Length: 380
Image (tube, rainbow, N blue to C red):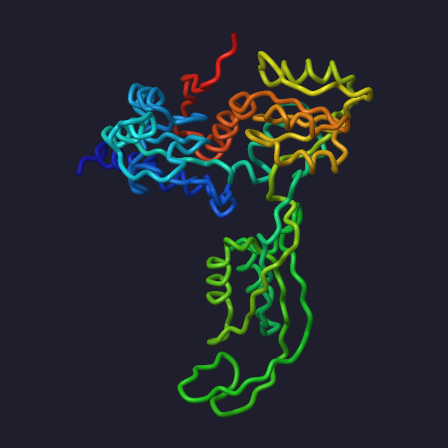
């Protein structure tokens, strides 16, 4: 093969990107295990092994967005909202959902949705909103429970550090801003190899006593398979002793909404002006402004009325979200100011967030932002 052809082939292999490469990376940032039970995040059309010619990022995937992807030669659309949300019993083109899916399939365009899983991670949608508004000291407003598991295992002392490093690399031992976290106690392990055993330590039919470390680590439950695989691969014993415990602990890195503070307190009307400018808003629906300065602010992209009690309990002066119904505004009860900025408006910067995530990992790959205005709501 001529040298030029070899170089061209090598460059093609170097820069070839498949759908699963991109979506797999996104799921390390926002695991699908963190989506809400009603949601439908993930690959909705297309094949994981399909080679990607270009990525188009959008808030909503509708027919016009698919047309834009075709025009821009992008065969992977990454949307925040899943176009397939309820079950489809037929695809005949009778509504905008079916027409969008048909057009994507006919043109070999993959559609991937990253919805409430991106809402629920501490580096996701709500952090982006908070940063746009200028909030500091950010925390999840309503952290989730039952997302963590504890692993306890028993390791010969000489192998403890090596096994723990394997567990850390697989995702265990991360607690907030601290990594490589474990608890270790010394003890004595006893066993007798029998039959066809091939012991790392000891002899068949002979009772053994070994100095071991009991090691405990915590990991996100959805990473259980890879953590156990790492344990078994790194552990010297033929039969690895371990047990798992699901934890009810609050996970401060996963949950709904976000709470933060302004660097300097603002008068309510001044905060509204900041909110309007920073989020590019044309209108804000809000409850009565309170007679106190705004310091603490809660946010939730999209429909966040369910978080109002948490925002009040957190001591927030303002709660920024969308989709409040008329009677729900009364629930502020003079304790907090509700500011409904619109669903599309609250989440539009998700496109920017996804672009930052992908450009950081794939800096040489073409990432495009959809220019299609998918907001179904208009103001007169």
